[in-house]
Length: 264
Figure (tube, rainbow, N blue to C red):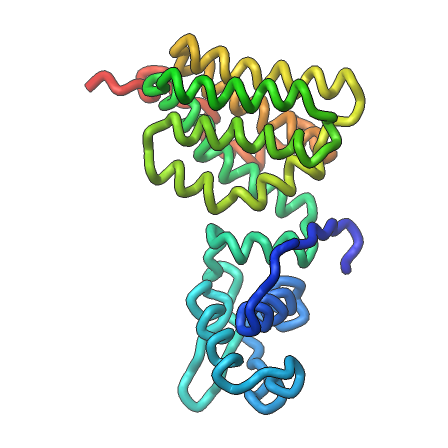
């Protein structure tokens, strides 16, 4: 594994073709199978993985569907460029975590979170129900109850974010929340606040999200979500000054309030 990478193992079992797909994907993600490189022939791969031709071909089909491979007549099976990979695929995210994640991966994750979660929080402030608020408060209460370096704390943190996405009422935001679930878990686990002052900061920051949504404060909810995301980056070793330029780009992180509300 390269220096600076942290691997997050997966705990579920796999079928034969899923396991072969996973192992080939790990080679691709880790760079052992280079972009544009041709995979070994069927006979070699069948011997390597100890599987039949139908199982191998099913594995290749899986990776073609996820954008990692392409099959070309008279050429064979070729590794595709990274830009073609379906990064919202739950398996592909899980494989990235197993291959090892670095600060760049966490920054990329923060970019997509900043593109979606503040808007989800703003919509949640407009559309939330009492049931939505109960789910958010349950997540917050669990964060307060559980040790900050525990899996249960990370699960509670994630549950709160999922509750916000659900409260947005937008099925696309709910779907995005689902497919990045595994990456968020890793992000939260890797940045879990251990010291008591840091734990308090994290809980207070999340409480601000819930309070703003409860108060139907659209802009406040979005700003609170941005603060939580940047605070997570800081715990990964980045500061807001270091990351805000790359993450924010030329645009404001928070849209003006008249753009966040639905008045027309």
